[in-house]
Length: 263
Ligand SMILES: Nc1nc2c(ncn2[C@@H]2O[C@H](COP(=O)(O)OP(=O)(O)O)[C@@H](O)[C@H]2O)c(=O)[nH]1
Ligand SMILES: [Mg+2]
Image (tube, rainbow, N blue to C red; front, side):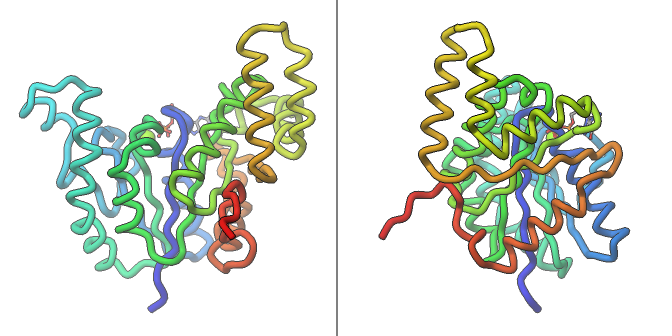
């Protein structure tokens, strides 16, 4: 059997990862595709996700807090490393399900997944040849120019750290007005538009920094477009599926768009 395609969902806390994983899995099933949900968030409390494989079977945040007297942040950090130790159990459980697509929900806070060494071991262990990262943009942040640049930078950082192809997704697009949606889409298509929007903001340190950061990110390579989706209204799911398929089928998308060439 061909190896499954694995999609890792990342993004800031509250961006809509967990909700998207459920909505996308439901969409896939209704479209006749086969998908397995893996929860890698040891603190997940939302029963709506109903994962097929759940890290909480092996690592639970509340247990770590009780057992080692840790606070919620300390427990998250300890858990991030413990997940790596249990990742072959997770891999085994996924393999037994013989699925075509594996959708991996990651811990709420992006830094726990993106900035910890253990996460690389996790991704290396779980990923076959066909893997893609999805980075979800929270519209609450993405709708201001400085917030948008912050997300661009985080997304580029995630892509750099994992060296995997990455698809940028605008989550919860239903909360945006058509004008806001059009503006954000224009920013993602044309960085010059973000610079223009920044230059219309009051001159603060934040604006100056965003402007410089944007120049640096632009210098790394072409920006990939942002795909509008709504889990609430189940829109944009087909476009997201096609974007993942394009990566899995190979071709130019296989190299991270921001990665400098090494030859
Ligand atoms: N309006 C709207 N709200 C959403 C959507 N997706 C998620 N949410 C809400 O956003 C909040 C955070 O979602 P969650 O999936 O837990 O975010 P996570 O921390 O990234 O996993 C929850 O209150 C969700 O109900 C969406 O497509 N539209
Ligand atoms: Mg979540």
